[in-house]
Length: 89
Image (cartoon, rainbow, N blue to C red; front, side, top):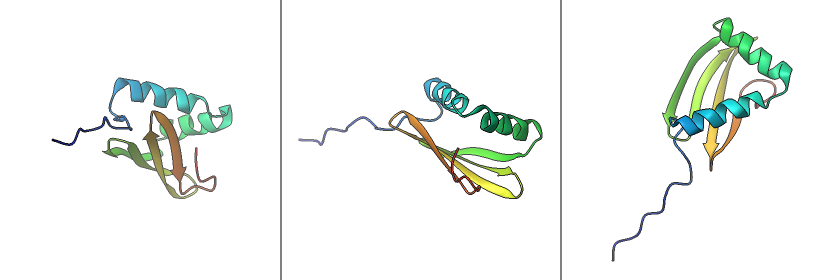
């Protein structure tokens, strides 16, 4: 008997639902953090953004130095890590 495949436990970051949940998650940050992100984007300090796999997005941002940022979508929930002093968000 063939092994029955289980549905994936992570969702593709390329779906409208994932992008909508990403937007909601980002908007849940405190206003100062959210505004800093908006300002960095407006100032072209977001150097690159790419989805290397279905469950995470990577990028780099120019702050006081260049920082690596990774956003993870696991079981429908977003989390993050970065090389910035905060280490996340």
